[in-house]
Every structure is written in structure tokens, then in C-alpha cells.
Image (cartoon, rainbow, N blue to C red; front, side, top):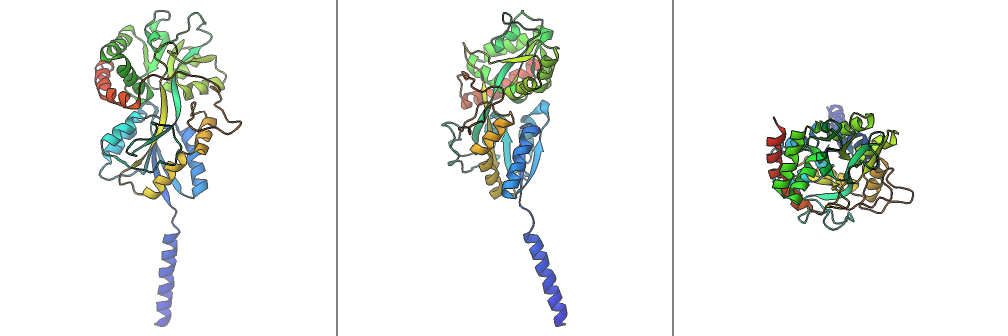
Length: 336
């Protein structure tokens, strides 16, 4: 009898030890391209021993799809962290009560890059750019503004942009609505459709068509454009509206999910993502073109080192305020 009790006790201790040895984990939903996000998340695993389960989104519905998923899961959260390549959907999720307050005081971020109530933090940035095919566009015909999509210098079949209802193109649309006003911005997008400008499934599609010569030029993001440059495609980047209202610069954002299953691990991942070391890694991965931290010696954006860019003169809150009305108007324009 005593022997049986000892065996039973040993089995219980073994089970308890096995339970104690279960790996810690964190679940992150991210709209950052997997090729850029995965090396960072693997580095986090190696440094902390915390296993990462990552959920990515498809190119055509970047960020919006994940935000809707988080909203649908609000009563039974599955994720701990939302890492977005932009800021509008993050602010939206805060307004909808999906986010939890985090501790970002020690992140060393610029003024305005931390939500005053602590629901999100922003870091690093990409920019909206004009990508031209240098075989088709000369210095004399090169566009200098996003508004040149309406120019008759090139046929409408030779210029394009991603669908303004999704991703950073929707962020740019909201920024234009905030900056130019709904009437002027609405007329601009309506004329794009009437003119027959190419509306494509994502920024990478715009890049590929410019690189191949199917488009003479188009609007895309700095990371997509850099990919074409590094592959040796006949392309060049123009930062638009440098003599006007400026180029849109878009930071990454990080937020914790209210009621997430692993809050401690979620904060650890958020701290890691907001660190200067991670930002330097993302610069080297050609995701971030405009860092918020000082970079180590020898680290610089491959395609934009030394670039001095005038940002668009409109704030995060103003752009967010224009998001809903701009999306409502754009649905009428682009959804046939």
C-alpha cells in the first residue's frame, strides 16, 4: 500500500513538473509583411524563450481584416498584441474598447508617438512614394505629386494605385480628406475612377507592374519600392509633394489586447518591438525607412539613407477623424 502511494506521489510530481515546464507563449496579430515580421519575432523567441504564435493578413485587406477579427473576438480575445504597419486601425480599436493600457514610458519615443492614455505606441515609419519606371518616365515627365494621377502626361492605363479602401492607401486617402477637405478629395478620387486609372489589389502589385513596365508609375510604400530597387529593376522613387503639402509618413503601432490570454508576455513583446534594437533590425530588413531611435553605426536604410523628407502637415488624430467619412465616400466611388 505504501509503495503504491509513493508511486502515485511520484506520478503527481512528474505531472506537476511537466506542467511547470510548459513553454510561455504570446499571440500577435500583425499586418506587417511576414518576410519582415518573422525574423523579429524569432529574435524575440530566442532572447526571451517565449514562443510566438503570429497571425498575418493578406495583402489586399492589410490591417482592416485583422482589426475586424479583433473586434469580432472582443468578448473572447485570442490575441495578446496587435502590431500594425500603420496607425488608423489601432486608434479605431482603442475607440471600440478592444485595447488594453500598456506601459510605454520607457520606450524613448518622440512626442506624440505614445497615446496619452497609454493604449498604443508608435515607432519607426514608412512613407508613401511615387515609384517610376525609369525606362518610361523621363525627368521632364516625372510626376511630383499624388495629384498627378489626374495628369494627361501618361494614359490612365499606365498609372495606378492600390485600392483606397484598404491598407496604407486608405490611410493616405483619409489624410487627403483631412488636408484638402471632403469636397476636393472626393472630386479627386471620383475623377480617378472616371479617368480609368488602374486600381490594383495591393502596393506590391503596383510595384511589380511599375518594375515590369506595365505601368509607367504608381503610388506605393517605401518598403515595396525598396524591394524593386534592390532587385535591380529599372525604377526610382520620388517623395511626392515636397514643394506642397508633403509626403505621408506612416509609423508602426503596437498595442495590447484587452483580456488577452497572456498579458505579461504581451507586454514583454510590446517592449521588444518598441526597442531601439528591434527598430535597427527592421531598418536592416528594409521595413522601416524613417526610424524614431538613433541607429547604431553602420546601420542605415538601404534605399533612403540620408533622405530629408517633408512630412504631410496633418496629425494622427486629424487623419483618424477623417477615416470614417472618407471610407463612406470611397465605397460609393470604388464599389460598383
